[in-house]
Image (cartoon, rainbow, N blue to C red):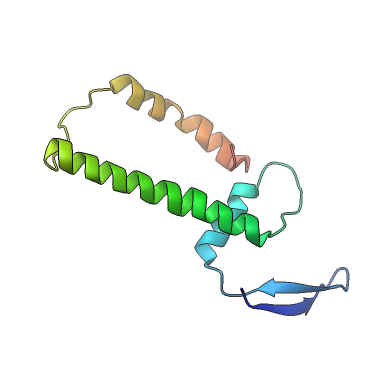
Length: 111
């Protein structure tokens, strides 16, 4: 179980729990994934937090890195190409930069 300390809300006077022991980087990721342009409150759902971090961060990122390293090792003797073979695809990533920046500036982090 994650240790929680009771604290009293200054605005409502209700007692709530403050979570301790969670990695701040994972919390920032979780909250940023929940943000959008609307002024809604964000609740910390520990089950959703654990599922999202395990699925998005650990599962996907580690899996992609591991598969890529293994593929490059087995098929290309640990060597990457000196030229880009899919220039159009790379350009599409570059072209998406402005849209990504707009979403970031408008706090549409989940898009």
